[in-house]
Length: 320
Image (cartoon, rainbow, N blue to C red; front, side, top):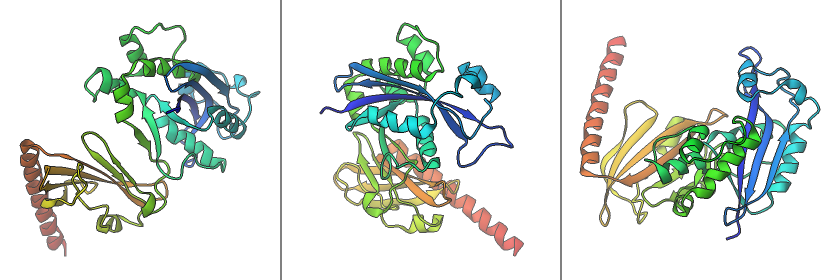
């Protein structure tokens, strides 16, 4: 495997409440990246400022955090030119690595704004170094700031934080010391571009759970009727489970379910209904083994959901 790791960091500007464009809430003004080879050795770096076209005044919080003046950006090249050069620098076989999940979504939003070809025809695989650091060194749930992680690992702080090139460098240093097992078993997916059709829907199996991301549906009801979206299969053998608790919801957005696999026992499912930028709905579903405590909790939650639905039904009848 000769895949390169492109450790990426972005800095962006934004408008004020009355000037913000919904199609581009954050305009990228800096790209910083470090290229690591397959052995995670640093082999090259990329850094470039970008001349803004959407927001010509720096937001006061941006000035404060990244300590940058608009005058420093006016002589830079525009985003499409910088992005084309950056992608050429990345090469052919690589995976993006970022501190946290936000950068790639904003990168692709900026690309779409300028009519550029998408990075992928659907969800984009990447490594969330912030999550990997927590899985490798902590409890897997804590999400530290980059500066906090650098301090924890006693990495020398030679450059200031909150600039694209320095933050990419610090992130690369942390990636280099994370255990190989964490990298191989915990790939993340950016969902800015959803699967275009059923054939390209995302179905991934990890060590302890499976994940499914659907295509878009016109509305919530269509998503919940889809046979694949509402299936609850064993994450180990991928066979249909026997329904123990059908999908139910406490809030109308997240649905829970319980099934039993003849070979691998009870499985708990969580189905999240989300809205895409275009206002359509899609499903993100995870399935994991269920403990006895999980089964008990799910049954209690289902009872609460049924009671809440009965109250709503009585209220509707009273209003009629």
